[in-house]
Structures are given as structure tokens and as C-alpha cells.
Length: 260
Image 1: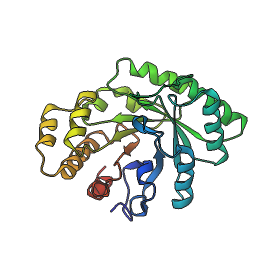
Image 2 (image 1 turned 180 degrees about the horizontal axis):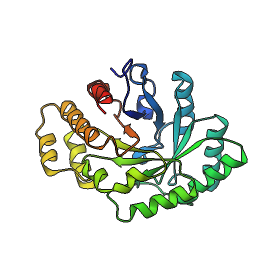
Image 3 (image 1 turned 135 degrees about the vertical axis):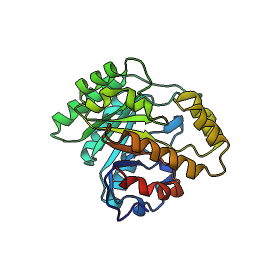
Image 4 (image 1 turned 90 degrees about the horizontal axis):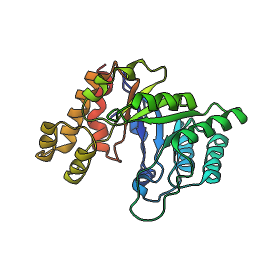
């Protein structure tokens, strides 16, 4: 397990609303911070800000709430920002939010404006709340987008889930940013998820075939994560693990936290 390990690789952990009630104590020993998503995939769930506060109080760890630009107008977003500040959360992670199939998306402001809003209220309230934003290393002109997010106030970044270390290695600018970057990783633990993500993310065809033919997806995902860490740990600040509540995966990767 991740508890009582000598940590040489920094990592953060996402805990989804579906798994809030589980006891995560065994996996939080070296966690830099915990993130809570905001209605991922457009599925309504308990609010990210109060759930982040609950985890902060329960485990005594730094927690980061997520706010998306999809679900609220500007007034609603400001309300969430102020709640996060008053509850003294460690940070707010800014995302645009997955597109939804049913219902109406709001998107009154964009991610750049949201980052600026958080920065404004952080200053107004004398808060030191951190502002996180996303990096999509596969997107063209991503450095320009990242620079604009930094100019607006972003303090750290988490990449989209990485399944090919070359995505990090070829974007040498990631290593030289003046703010921390955490490489995201979400294990692909079903054939349906593998098929979906292989269309959206850069995954080696050989790896896709290996995962599709796998008799032990936890083992093979852990091996992939270890390979990525070994090849990129001097290019990023750490890793953001999104295990979707899979404790066996967390147990399997415990050794990787000691390799860099």
C-alpha cells in the first residue's frame, strides 16, 4: 500500500464523488493533494467544493475542488469560488467540462475568465488558494494556451491522462515551465473504456492491442504507468492519479512511487 513509503515521486490523487464514503487512509500517505471532480461526463453528483472540504476535514490533507465552466452562470461560479476560499481549500482546478448529450450547457464564461475571477477574489479576500488548470499536450499550439492561463493566474497544471510518454518528452517546454506540472494517468480497466480513450488520446497501437487482449488489466495498466514514470519523472513535477476508486490498482503501483 502507499502508506509508510519513502516517496521520491510526487503524486496527487483524484477521489470521485462515487467513492467519497470509502476509507482512503491507506493510500494518502504521500499525497501532495486530493482533487474532487465537478460533475464529470455531465453526470450530476455532490458538489465538488463541499466534498473537497469533507475530505480535507476527514484526512487532514490539502484538497482541490474543481469548477467547470459548463454548468453555472457567472454568479453561480463566483459563489463556488467564495465558498472554496471561505472553507480554506488548498486550490481550485479549472476545467471547461465534458460536453453533455442532454440538457443545456451554460458556458457564460471561458476557462481564461474563470482563472482571472479566482485570482481576483483571491486578492480581494487575502487568500492564498492555488489555481490549477489543464494541459492537453496533444493539442496544437498548446504552449500559447498554457501561457495565457499562466498570465491569467494559473499556479499549477495537470495534463490530460497520458498513455504515451513521448507526448511529454516531445513537448520539451513542459519541463521548463515556471509552475508545477502533474502528468495525469487514469487506468483503462475495461474494453469499453479502452476503445473510447484510444480514439481520444495518443495511445500506441501495440499498447491498445495488449490491453484489449489482457487477462489482467490492473497489472498491465500498472506496468504502463511505471513505464511512463520511469521515462518522464525528470520532466514533470509529479503525477496525478485518477484511479476511479480501484484500490487494487493503487496497491499495484505503490512501488512506482519509489523509483525516480
